Image (spheres, one colour):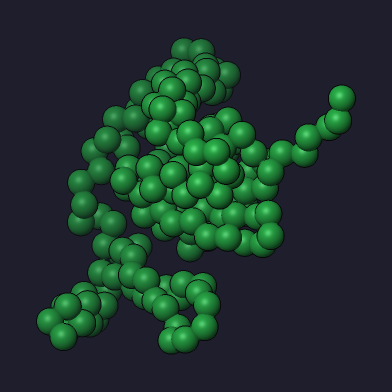
Length: 178
């Protein structure tokens, strides 16, 4: 009851909001997230520094230079991700990647979305400020997921585009015989 009362107070102040979560049978599930008006309460100086650095790169090397900088970061991240996401099945790899992303602050979860389909939902976007100015960040993130999971990854929803979540639909790669 104490937690419930605290949540109600935070909602009344406009600091958090409830969002529905898809689930099975039974009571509807709800999740909580920071309301847009509350994001300014948390320091985000890293975003300003990152955006300033990317703007400088763009000024000196053009948009291609920004993309190269983001790809370099992807290469570094890929190594660490591959060390931690190495299960045999796609379902297990998706689960491992979602867990890793959750620990990194993306508030990620994974679900089965069909017989051979999975989804990763990220309720928080730590790179939002970068993505608002440099859409390449989202494209490169998708490529990172494809490489780590060794699967097809389609981005269907984006926080930066006004979605409630970033949603990645994951399906096995088609293998061609021969």
